[in-house]
Image (cartoon, rainbow, N blue to C red; front, side, top):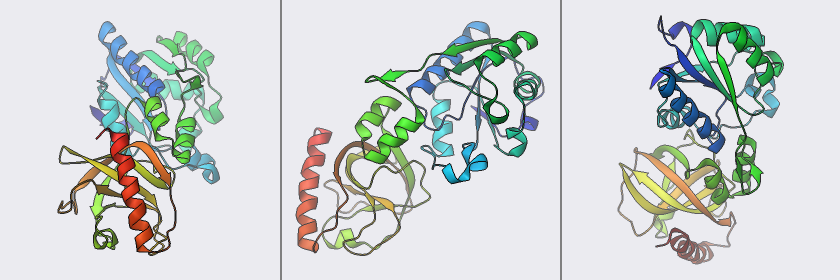
Length: 309
């Protein structure tokens, strides 16, 4: 997949294209339907399947007090989009200049002059242009003016709920990774480098891989989770712990992972992915090492059961 980060990087003569537009913060089932449709339509009409997205949520610029951490890192996002067969991703910096574009300017500069779009697919409720003043109706009218077709895809529902990035984030904040995984059509992941920690887990018989705090992927509610650790294409069953280790020493919030039945595994300085399959229990402080070890053994029994081991 070709990744472009500005209009000036678009190759001369690119297109014609089939385009979908969005923040795509978590690539949930609704987003995936858009990607699948744009790739399929592009193949049928001999167009280049293209995604227009942004380097950050608009709130980071317009309402910084409301800005949330991204559910996906930029690398995760690009890999997932490429996996649907998208040929070109234009990831624009969401700056004041972009925020100030009227719907007409957005369409003319990006879709028409930039990408030579002939088909534009958007999700239900799509807004664009300065202060979200553009909607599906105005995009359709602009398409008629500039010679491209506009299609709106309906929202996707799971268990009676409309799938949305906001709902996915709220569920992660509740620790409900099982329902999150249904809404995103895959297992939620955090990816980062294993760094040296305090090595406390090793001293009590449960060595952990500490993931660097600049890892990609949104951390769910503080607690213990059943999941998998993937390193060098090998999947290991694991218990992931998210939060602050108050039993020993308060440290910044992080995620650490204990691989089941492995005590000599050397993962330091390797990039690993942690998959969150199910919730085990919320975070807790224990009265000493014995109580902690007893609880860890109970947690590992639960993990084995949840992973079907």
